Amino acid sequence: MRVGEDTLRALAYPALVGEPEPGDRVLLNVNALAMGLGTGGYALVVALPDRLPPDPPPAPGHAVKARYTPLQAVVLAADEEASPLRETLAAAHDLAGMPVVTADLHSALPAVLAGVLADRPTARVAYVMTDGGALPAWFSRTLDALAGLLAGVVTVGQAFGGDLEATNLHGGLLAARHGLAADVAIVAQGPGNLGTGTEWGFSGVACGEAVNAAAVLGGRPVGSLRISDADPRPRHRGISHHSLTAYGRVALAPADLVIPADAGPEVRAALSRLSRHTVVEVDPVGLDAALRALPVKLSTMGRDLDADYAYFVAAAAAGRHAAALK
Image (tube, rainbow, N blue to C red; front, top):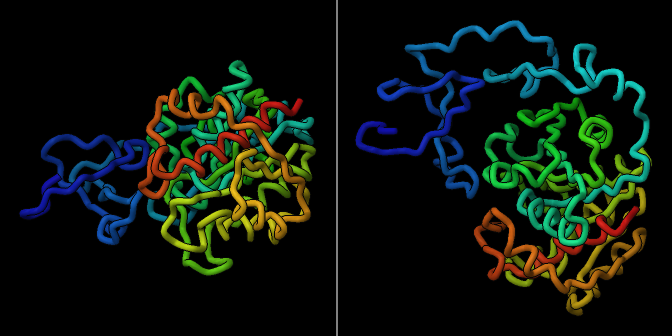
């Protein structure tokens, strides 16, 4: 995409703006690109002003996502009247003990999945994507790479573009269990979390809310701890302050918090702040091979598997524990 003398990478969602063709003029939003965000290295196509998309065909859905923004999308919620799952979900009131793994960052998703499938290769694992990061699930390259390994994606709240849509996290968990027949659900925000460097100013507080939702619905909450010995920011070394706040102060229901059995003393010392929960040690043997066999390149904050090994192994250990829960 050329803008004057500059060339930009631009991303269009055809379902929202139509299908761009060579030579089209486009209206771009470049805010995230100008800020140099790690997950925002694109201009986003807002419209094709000279060739608007055709009106969408009549559709049964009436759930509006990204509400009252210029690109609000109308989708069919999994539990609304016109949905083929309406009767099933209207009768669904609990998760029947389904393990629910909660994670702070989208980058933990493939690692948690690897941990589940390492021990239960036939398990049906659903991803429940919350709206703390990207809203369209279409933005995630990880989800593209994991196609065939996940039972499906449920987008909740203002997030959209999953295999199933849900109004909120509770409905999304029920849709994962009863609509996708999931054995395990992984809850995490989409790509591009928001944080201000303060105790409460980060979108990952939703981890604690997910623990509460899983518990109230009769699921088995499993907390994936954000652990790093490579992050240059002291607040994220050992157990990140994100995990300490989300699990230590937001989560009111108890969860299993998982650490690899070889976790270091800095991690173990921080666990005293998470006394509401049960700390579970998991043998990491075999998880390295499972992580390296994934069809997606692991990356968190620009660091790959070997550069932030503790982070990915901790997430995989949470998946392994979830796989052991029946």
